[in-house]
Image 1 (tube, rainbow, N blue to C red):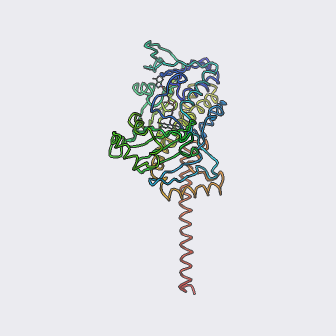
Image 2: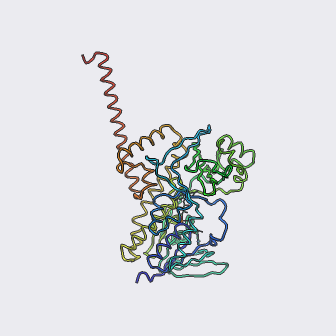
Image 3: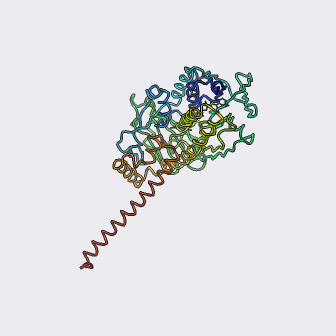
Length: 446
Ligand SMILES: Cc1cc2nc3c(=O)[nH]c(=O)nc-3n(C[C@H](O)[C@H](O)[C@H](O)COP(=O)(O)OP(=O)(O)OC[C@H]3O[C@@H](n4cnc5c(N)ncnc54)[C@H](O)[C@@H]3O)c2cc1C
């Protein structure tokens, strides 16, 4: 019986805890190991991204196991972007043609805790906290964990690695020559700052994702249920505009006063936050293959960490879980078939969103500020209204549907080509009409 197989999931982050829920529901006995203490009784690490944008792909995964209501209860919908110009002006850009669709700001730790609660409540799932995977041996499928100074080895039938960006399982598979990994590091890092409530209320409009696009860098802010905003700086690590360039109180206040002037009065702890919060790294991980011998697979960031500029990293990991569950269902839980099938269906999609996320950085930090960008967005919304379900903007497809990412890329390329042809046709038609008018006025046609 396939369901007698002993499954070990490494990493009880967002993806691992969701995966344990799905596998438990399929009838598996699952051991979920996590190096950190139980987050429900421990403090959140300072500087780890505090909130996340949750959109349709994640909601779909949660809906399938009846978790959407509990996750969404504290969520804050954001119906568009609020662009903060350097002169302090603000412009709202709706995410959808009808203005009705929203992405949702949720607390990362609350989401993780809800998923851990759900995993714990699922029959067959056992969670082990404070258990750090120290090594993994592929030949024997043996995992060695360190728990409070004690070393414990466990042999599994199936190992699913959801141990994130720095995955030990992935590193071990790479060392064994079975997985090749390319890490594409960005010269930018991120740092989080806070905007507290003002007179007990949100200091900015909570219905928007706020962006201060500044060409080579940017700051964004997402609302939290406690009426604070978490701001994230995405800056070069070094150079004149980089994190390294500012350290003293005077430098920090002078720079922010010049570049984010409207935000400074809202940030009483700016200097302290800037000086003490760490700079996080940003990179894309491309790994291939994602599974070896039908007995070990990489899932979520362990397989494909991406840049955060489309708000899709966790969403993509949640889709991995749904797909893996679907593959198991299709092949009667034969893991030797299901794992290659999962990889085949997901890998190119993860590559597609990795590329889109990279491109979206330029859009967010630079293009959103331009009149051409605004006009294009408005034109796209008009097309979406005129051709409902036929024309869908790239943002709409990524955030508000579950159309596979690779198909999104293909479809938006086709749409761009059609738009270019239509625009070319419109220019030709205008030119022809103008020529006819000029000829008529000059009597050339008489
Ligand atoms: C600044 C920023 C903003 C982001 N915003 C968004 C967003 O808006 N929307 C979105 O969808 N995504 C967003 N992401 C991406 C998202 O955070 C990740 O894609 C997501 O957390 C991946 O989940 P995961 O479970 O695969 O990995 P992780 O969340 O990294 O979880 C891995 C887990 O494994 C554990 N672990 C690691 N090593 C070991 C070990 N050796 N032994 C045992 N346990 C181990 C870790 O402690 C952790 O709990 C953002 C990322 C960043 C950096």
